[in-house]
Image (cartoon, rainbow, N blue to C red; front, side):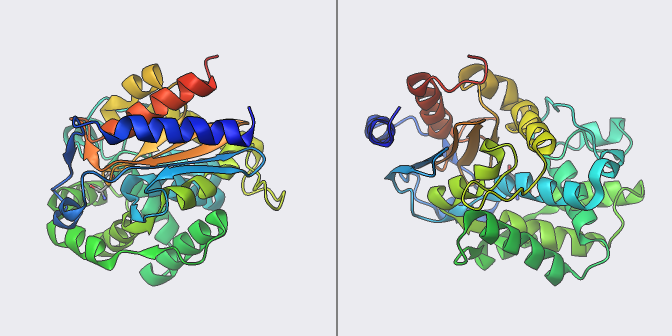
Length: 310
Ligand code: GLU
């Protein structure tokens, strides 16, 4: 399909969804996130040739929240390789993103790197041997490099808001610390975690950052490997199985693509070999995933024939 046909489909989907009123509920447990306009909607697709098709608020930055976990996982695998899997599992959780009960059953080892506990363990690994500022700088530089955009930054108000109210995450981190799963002081690890969740990016920037996962680990603009092909395949596999918490099965069923959601209402989805896609609509369903975002991706994968299951 040509770039102009892709743009037509993207515009069509944005127009169809603009009038929907069943948008779900904006996350409010991080007070600063509740201030976002629930009517926002953005969609961006970067195809394998680097063409961008965008619609709606695709250039408006939003809080990427848990989508950052795809990139911290990539960094941590680069740093520790398979040693990472001693600290965190890679099975779907079937529980909420901030579940505590599973962590107790599993003796402090989080089920996967995308639930909060798992992502906190991954952040702790990136932090080891560094000061929090350096670790955060490394994560931010990586995002800017992948998106080829040096304007990407952190929304300090969101980070501070989560730091003030992140009681659950403090509980999860302290629990893991008691099992020796975290190496660094809990405050340091969570400081870095809250800040990388508070990175603000637009759909276009996010779709740009995801390109390497759609191109077997290579940055298509430079041809350089970001990760080996095998690792890109595995990150995509974890996104497919665990990217939407206890809504992961539903997302795979409806969309058929690896994807990672965030409570800011964004979703990054990958059509391997074909495209990197980002969508944003702040209203969430009961599993904490963007309601219209999932619908937009379902329509896109259907109309473009992009499901990995054929
Ligand atoms: N920073 C959020 C938290 O830890 C991320 C959750 C999400 O995006 O799903 O609660």
